[in-house]
Length: 378
Image 1: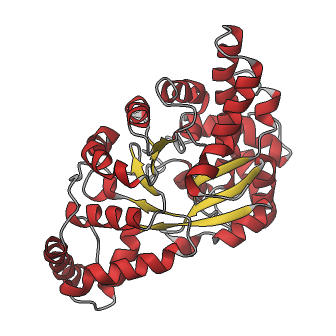
Image 2: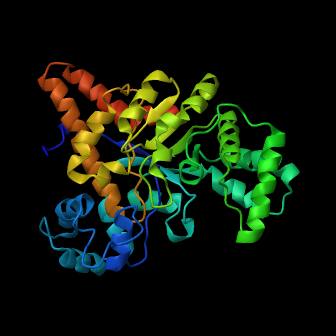
């Protein structure tokens, strides 16, 4: 994999979808559990260090810890454990040149740094992305009745949206992405809320998994004029991957396009080409390949190139979807810069675009598109 082009390497980035990092000491099992979405370190006798992301970590992250490239897992983990967690995080965050983080605070926030804490460690700005289902579950667990559920959720999301810059849906995990293009009526939402509340009594807490409620939450967030992110494609074992194809969102995307509010399709692997098609035909759709970028390691350039086959350069955004391990910020950023450079370099070599075009495209993808979509100040 060639080095990054100089102008790509110098780009300040906006990470438009990420999470906080862990600042407690982690043993080998703790590190391996955070390397992938698997939720396991694998079968006996195996290790996630023998994977694309594990080998990338040993190759590229070891020098950040003053180790030679390709350090053994044992040596890497021993050195990692010697450093205070804050110093460890700074070593990996500072070189990324991420200028702004858009932080999803909806998953296990108690284990992670808050957006301000992440911003301090990375010497950057941070903004919050609110997870829709978590807000709905908080409302349901707060004692509201089914009849008042819709209005209570609207009020809560409006309040959260005053400080957050966007929202996120995890419908892909709970119900799949084949959501109706019709805005749910309040009576329909009340019936779904009644089912939610009944189920919550039996399970000790609410868990949104009804497609009616997922669609209601998406429409409500879009009505507030803030971008809505959808998890798409690859995820942990709770997800049925065939129900996370972005093409299943076509009806909802067609119906919401007149609102003019950005819909951000996250991750997308292995459906990056499908997502690129949607970004081309719908004016309000943006995509990324965060999570996949570090997950596929050496193949990052190929995934980025496939995503950019149809995606307009004005609709593709950088993200890491880093979670827990600060190394994933470093890997996601480094592999993204190299992968984007590979795409741009081919265009330059083939005289498909000029050097000034390549610089402009890199600037759009690295930060400009996210800045426009989220209304961030320059």
